[in-house]
Image (cartoon, rainbow, N blue to C red; front, side, top):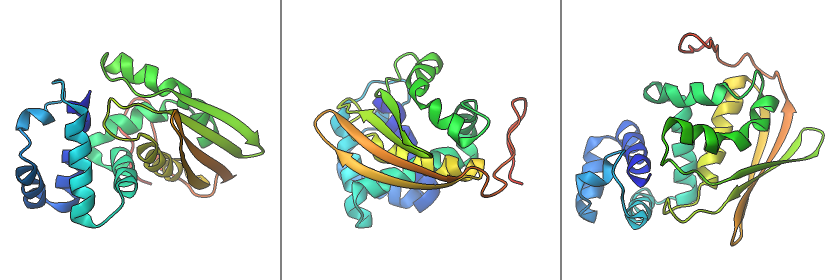
Length: 200
């Protein structure tokens, strides 16, 4: 699984900051190229070291960097397949939220050893949701900030006005608070089950 995660980080950094910076960071860490083969197993410590090095290089918190990664995974043309997988979750953002618990199982259908942490959705009130993400050490990082970036990008994709708050973590879970203010705040992006979506 970590090979796939490392490849996602590689694509994000190369596309966002350039090939030279990526090469500089990986050479400094002495990471072998096999660490970025999607189907190859990789020590979670490599992923953790990579995220820490990139955070230090940019002078940013790891959580902020991982949130940007989550947004990248939904918005970049090269990862359109991820956006399409997520859009199958519902016709609007509320339905999409209700489908979050199914994402780990759907990911495993696409790739059997892609083991995402459990996701649980709780409705707290009108338009207010609590998303709980089980902690996993296998990825070498917390998954919550990545999901926060995904949720932010998907809200834009659906045209919904949403307030998102990463509430932190404890020994067993991370919590994201979602406040859905307006389901149809903007037009969002076109989505067709048969063809790739395009911006309106």
